[in-house]
Amino acid sequence: MNPNIAIIAGGNSSEIVISVQSGQNIFNAINQSKFKPWFVHMQENNWEVFENGISIAQIDKSNFSFTYKGKTIKFDFAYISIHGTPGEDGILQGYFDLLKIPYSTGGVQSSALTFNKWFCSNYLRNFNIPIAKSLRLKKGNSISVSEIITQLALPVFVKPNAGGSSFGITKVKKEEELVPAIEKAWEESDEALVEEFIEGTEYTCGLVKFESGEEVFPVTEILPKNEFFDFEAKYTAGAAEEVTPARLPEAQFKECQALSSKIYDLCNCSGIVRVDFILKNDTFYFLEINTTPGMTSTSFIPQQIEAHGLKLKDILSQVINEKFVKNLL
Image (cartoon, rainbow, N blue to C red; front, side):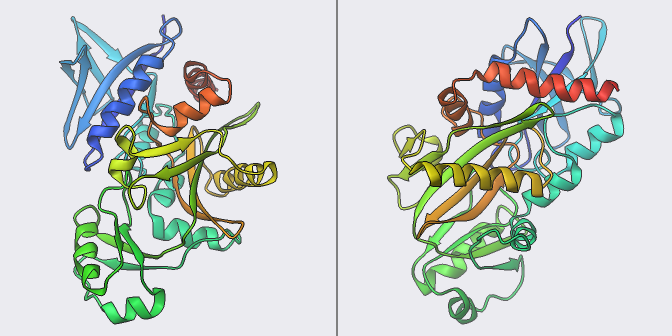
């Protein structure tokens, strides 16, 4: 009997819509001759199993099972495609660790570290990873506009410290725009990050590592038609030009891949991950790492896997197989 695989989408943040699209694309790509996928939607305390867009059962949170047609079905593996909390920040990972159910991402510590942009950036600075200067402001803190401008100058980027999919991000050019931008970021996270603006071209590189070796996918060059790569540019067809493989000299192309691989290891990642950079004056500046990256039909990872001459179905099978087998040992 094929293992039961939970494809988990949803979450408790503004990224829920994209998460559902990612989950559906993963569900469609699962090799159903090897695995039995089930679409699990989570939002707050409501965890449901869907079939053909219709809810068929509630999840029993005590053991992550459900009852369907008179049978209790237990999951053998969880593929987490939630962008944001609780799937990207270590909360679900801790839950599955308690239940001894293998899952697709890195563990609690890795997920918590990489989800918090402030802590992740400051950790990576210790290993000489180039990173923009930034300030962190907790919700409710007083905001000294003059101090921020003195330290970082204008323009700056303001973003939620814990979040993804470009919700709550603002490019601030004028002094009077700073406070509204910080308050906007606070709507998505209890902490806002004010980040030095680095002018350059954005690149992103996906990868996955197995015991047998690594697959570092081709780098993608991102040319948004908006002023920066915001939510609209990410998820609206035609709002950005995405070139895979990126038009970089071979040495820089390989440098970006090698830096992505190094960051993957430093953050103790597992599963499919994507690392984002800005290239300025021949230096790749780290932006962030996505440990449950977008997997919609237009997302970077599926594009990169195809450009690499591989199939998403095969990569997913390898991720599941390796972690499932490890769990049995």
